Image (spheres, one colour):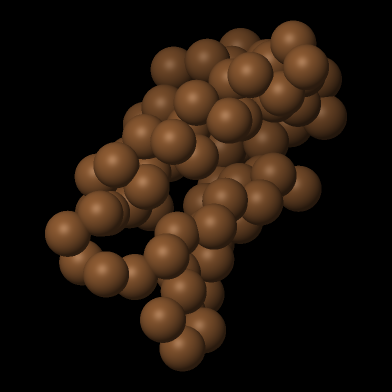
Length: 76
């Protein structure tokens, strides 16, 4: 579910949504999501001063609050 949410948000922001990939890895009580986009779309996903990336992380933590697990989003 979290993986699909990140893919949807990133796909809506970029010019090349077919290049969006999200890899999910579980480590103990942490879900690590690694977002990969086309090089030219990297700035759109990160945003000015990282605001877009921060907003995505905030949304993920709000959605995941009830599960008790931590979610980390890395943009590669």
